[in-house]
Amino acid sequence: SEVLLKNVGINPTRAGILTVLRAMGGNLTVLNERVCAGEPVADLLVRASSLHGTEIGGSIIPTLIDELPMIAALACFAQGTTVIRDAAELKVKESNRIAVMVENLSAMGADVTETEDGMIIRGGRPLHGAVIESHLDHRIAMTFAITALASDGETSIKGADCVKISYPGFYEDLTRLAK
Image (cartoon, rainbow, N blue to C red; front, top):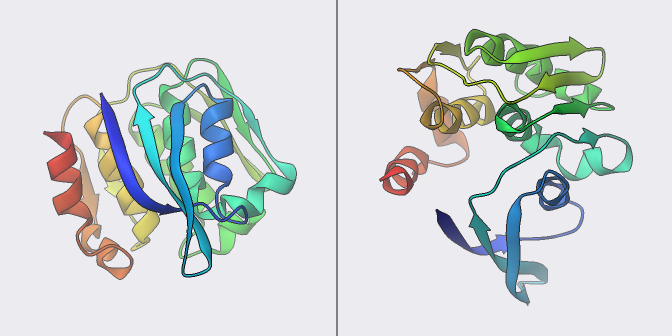
């Protein structure tokens, strides 16, 4: 499968997820780079690929702090171990995203361990549906809505409507992509 995402902000201070996806073996192509309203943007072509574990820490963390929940979920489907460190800031977001991710990924059958400043995810195990506690954190709800698509069984996300804070059309777009 492949998805073309148009007009994506690629400001280097926020685009660390692109670096991490490549380090995990993601098939990602940046197309049509340009500047729009003073900010770098591009179209991203993302194709299905086999991911592998990686280590994420240090200076890249501030460039992907809000994307770390999704990266942690992706790591569950990657072969090998992914270590996220230096991410203590996740504890003081809309929720303690480290604890919430570990709690919810574990409920889905992931092999994940919380650390003081991140988590260790041993990937390659199939995930299953579960009741997910969003803690009214929009990034957690979106992460688990996507994770549920790649998992067996049914997933229910408590407080799922909190995504309207940042992305009111999220579920409609996700449904369209999942077809």
